[in-house]
Every structure is written in C-alpha cells, then in structure tokens.
Length: 497
Image (cartoon, rainbow, N blue to C red; front, side, top):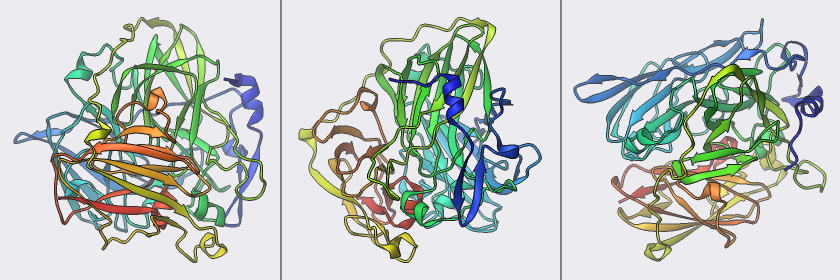
C-alpha cells in the first residue's frame, strides 16, 4: 500500500472551501487551521462509567443535555452531549450482569438513546419507539448476554437521528467477560486501552457546526472536512507502553474512513463490531463504514511519533455530483501517538483470541432479500420526495416489515441496487458474513458483526440466529447507517415471535 509520509500528507491538506446551506465554510483557516507544528491538543479520554449497585442491579445514569464546547480556542460552539456538552462517558459492563440505564432528557425536544450492537429486548433497545420526552426519564433494564465487545450508543429518533448525532450525542459501550479478562491484551483504560470515537464536522467561520442539509448531503449524507477524535481537534496521545490498543468507532454521520499509519507500519486487528476475531489479522489499511468498530493493536518504540491518518481514496471518474463518490472522507490526520522516551514493555499478542460458533448455512430456515434503493429525481434531491427505501418501502413506524421466529437461523441477502455504498445495520443480533458476490469475506470481517458495508451492485449474504427475546408488539430496526439515509426512510422493522 502506498502510504503518505507525514510531510507529503500535511502538504496535501491545503486550505479548501465547501458550501453548506449557501454559506462558505473554510478549513484549514483562521482559528481552525492545521497547526504547523503538528497536533497540539491532548486527546480527551471519555470518563469511564462503571455504574453503582442497587439491589443486585448495576445502575447507570445518563443525561442528554445541550451546552457549548470549545473545539477551537476562543470559539464557543453550541453542542449536545450526554453527561457533558459533547459526546458521553464510556459505559463498561460485564456479561451476565443485570443493568439499568436511566436516561434523562434535559433537551428542549424529544430524543432517544439506542444501545447499538447490544442483544436485548426490543422494548429496551432505545430505538425510535422508545422516545424520551423533555424533562422525562426512561429506564432501560436488561441482562447482558453477549461476549466481550466494543459497542456504542447514540440517539435514534425518527427523522432526527442524523441531527442529534451531528450535535454530539454518542458514546462507547464496552462489554467485558471472562475470556477478555484472561487475554494478555492492553486493558488499562486511558493508558494503553483507548476508546477512539472518530468523527468529521463542518464549521462556519464563527465556529458553529450547524446541521443544514444541502441537495448533495440529502442524497449522500453529511460529510465534514474537520476531523475529531473523542471530540478533540488536532489531538495527540502520550503513550507509555510498547503496545497500544485502540477501540475505534466510526461515529460519523456518513463518512467512510480508510485508516493507516503515516510511517507505513502494519498493525493487528483483534476485534470487529461484535467482539474478538479468532486470531489477530495483520493490516496496513483499515476501512470503517459509519457505525463500524474495530480494535487494533499498534506497536511502538521509545520516543517514536506516529500519526493515525484517514487516507483519501478516490472513486469513479464520470464527473458530476456523483464523481468519485464512495463517501470516503477527505485526507486528514486523526491522532498523533507520541511514545515516551522510556516505555513499558507490553505482553506479547496471543495467536488465538476466541473460538467462534460458526453458523451453518444448511441450518437456515429462511432467506430474505433486501434491496437497498435510492431515487435520483430532482424532487428527491431537494427534499421534496422520499428518495431512500428498502424493497420499495419507505420506513413507516406503524408497519411491521418482517416477522421472525424465535430460535430460527436465517440468511439475509443484501442487494445494493443504488449508485453508492450503504452500511447495513440490524438491531438485536450479531451476524456473520457468508459471502460478498459469492466470495468469502476478508479475514478482518470473519467474526461477529452488526454493520456491513454493501457496495454498489454488490450482493452480501449474512447469517444470524434469533435468540432469547420475542415480542410480537415491539419491533427492532434494520437500516442503512448513513444517518441521513435512515432519516429519509431507508429503514424497516422486524419483530421476533
């Protein structure tokens, strides 16, 4: 792979202008410029929330709130967050634990909080049916029934998910178990085990990051040109160990990230959305679609500096609005890792991480086909029509699209019949990828997943088993995780009976 050097990379990030709602927005520029001396802000580490015990239940208290955040010195940006002005704490739970999450809403409008990737009853999912009104509290109570994984949480209000996430409401949700306890992986939170919420935003000259949909962003999703890691602009992290574990979340609205190290070094991916891979996978370029997660191990040497970059990878060359569109974010640096002059030796990476229970295609009792569709009429692009659908249907809260039997194993065949990729996400279950256009998935996708990128004209088959929870009256969602597509109707509902 051809990896930029730091010098050539920074040279490539020359000042540029984009248009949002008719207003020119510049970056780098003025107070938002890329520092000539490199990254200058210490990476913020989200608070670790382990809850408190109440009668055998682990209780977590979360408050959705508005506030202001100083991303750039001297600029006060209106934002929203959970237990703070932007983003939220990292929740840590254990497999088998009974938990209750109290979600209070101090916003001036309704919202929800969805536990993305979690296996749980539909009524506790925090989807669009579990609305929390202003000045009210909703309690989500369930038992953790899944392996160690890096999950996350975010709003899921019908028609407003994209705006609420854009304003800053999201956080990570870590599950640990006996297996993760036993592995010699970096696990000292904030020291060698780092949550990394990657996002991009667009700012006006006065420091606001208004959510305003243009013709382009209605169709393609909101893609920014200012990168953040954990809500920190131009961040660096001071490493004190020879191995660093990054729990990476693509928390963007619509951007696909292509992550690499600026020195061209390889790294090891040890986990995907739903937990550990069976064995580490060596990589030098990691693609993450919106909402996908990956855990990687980066090797360091004393006094070394290495940059985690988003690589600019182009698409087609036909010209026009869709030219080169793969929703890849522009090239920019996400995080500089600075190893101390003296660093502690980490344990060797184990060659075996977990044993997967592989689902057998022959055990599937049903195959369902889902066509991911977009309409390109001018009315749709201007917001005058429904442009995003699944199987010809736009999301309807009152309609159940699929009925699944508890205990069944099914295959879902995802067909992208549109001109751009769609990250497909389903609630409740972790699935396994059977194939992409008949070919096996890449080694780093060979594990438990809840998001899969489906490329234009591609057919992806996934297999899953529906266990534990059935409720004929409470649906789960499946949808594209480009949040503007989800809000525009590329979402459906299923119940387990």
